[in-house]
Image (tube, rainbow, N blue to C red; front, side):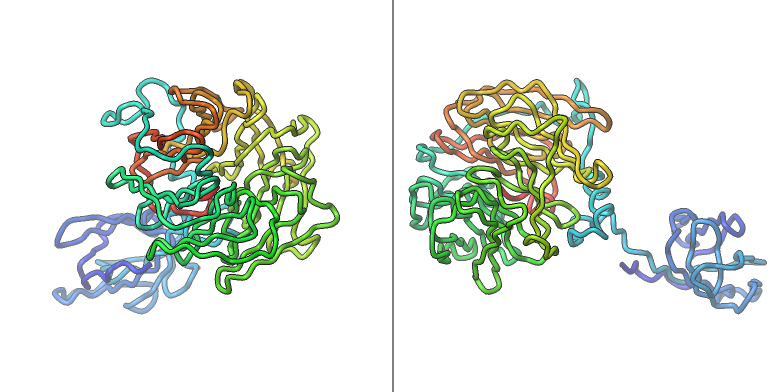
Length: 477
């Protein structure tokens, strides 16, 4: 980015020599030091308009120099000579480098951007052990409550935040789209949808539309928040997917769950659907995976539910349709609907949300020399029919597990080193109450109502940025 040009003769070199310099604004007395300018390109002049005595440089009087960590050069990209000033030098302009870390979530998920994105995400959260006194003094402890009257009977499963601030509930077993407006705490409905467990999970497209992921229907649902219009795209037959992610190239990957062993691909620019059927290895079978997570390197992790392998989809690979697996052995994956849903941590690891297991799954795509490493965290209390469905990365870096049949909210705190810790909070209805959660910029988490008749709200009092809440790393189910 370009900083506004400084007024010529405004900044003068007031102290230091060569690689330790301090510039002072002659009008405001603000200072810039060399360390804060590293990587910047500066233009200097040694003759002020109101001074008669010039300074002496090693070369010509007007120079463009790029500052490095070790030396100041003049007239070259990497200075071969130190800047030697005899007299007064003035800074006429500064061209600052782009702060990639601050723009991490704007970068395309790819191998080359992986480390920058991970570093940027890590900066966005305050990863501390949640003990007494760690919340800001102005924030009270987190609270749970409910609001509104919803249909119940597995009405919705999964939700999505749209740019106008509303939350769209994915219609599973109800015939209308649910809308929650956080600004007014109002719940409304719109459209006519198939019902009968039609859609499970949703994805926000770059053009602002919402994709409803087909679970028990032959159509992909599309909702346009700008017009509140619902339309469909035919797939030809019922295939069975649960959740999806936006790929770096703008397509949507639909996560395989049904008996038809394929990975769904939806292209928003043409509203076209196709699918990939891997063969070696093939997809494991019905309910093998349940949900998916986009990685900072552009690949997608398929969350193992009944599967004893972790699925990896690489949209840029032509080998086996881009599908490969990681088969952990020590520990092995539990299978038996162990996990439903996954959450990306700021450090690039993925948390598998415990559904029918007493452990939290942790997958490190970079572990085991890049082959991927799986580990577990014990302490989860299972619930008959499944404890949690879906999770949310909280503003402070902890992970919230959305209660399904469980009667409390799960909280996982990933440690900077070690396995981390698990606790619970609040009292929730159980009985298949909620399916998925959505983080709002005001710090609240919306629990998507399934078999309960109200919307759950978990208030953290720790706001988050719009860009993080809307990002496909997190804004999906």
